[in-house]
Image 1: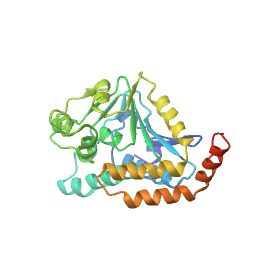
Image 2: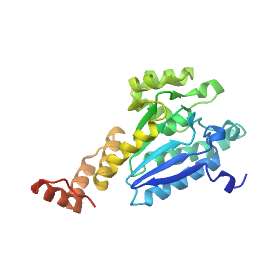
Image 3: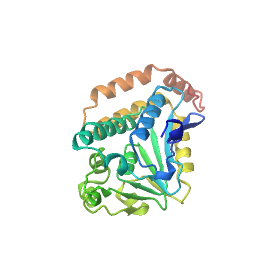
Image 4: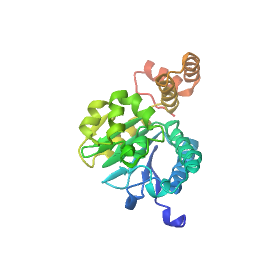
Length: 261
């Protein structure tokens, strides 16, 4: 299959200062293979370099599936060495790229997010799920194991016992359960996930981009157990010296809303 035939696998569009990163391999339920992973990495690299983008929404072109996870046809034929040296390493690098994107990322989840699809969703900063969304780590049912950081990122969100339940049984949970466990931040009517994610992204885009991006770094550093004293000091100094802070102080004195650049 040529690159042109796979051009819709990952599509980036924009709405003002918000980028919409759409998974478009609909016929395969957005199952991730090497070409799709490469397209995702290229899109993330471009977004990270684009100063005009202040927030990102990760969505699916399919109403039935956010992402089915790793394509069994792609990894099933790999040797153990290829699995370790390419599939796992490439996936980790690209998922870490998503998690480390300087702009906030909101996942708009309709349909199912299984295996690598759930791992992809938990790389995002926030998750909004449609009411029919379902979540699973089904790797044990195909005699493998979560391979792209899912056991760590899911663990941080829902704790060890619930992560074990997902990983040990492979049984999906529904959106309401995912909300009660803390796996998603909001559940909305079916079909509304993208619109709600875009509304939230718009709120983020209206804030100071520098402040938002520094806050993301500080929160992520603390969540991973890293010391943030130096980072806090740097963030305070940088924001205080910037034009947005000066505008905020002026607006406060003039009793008006700030107009951030």
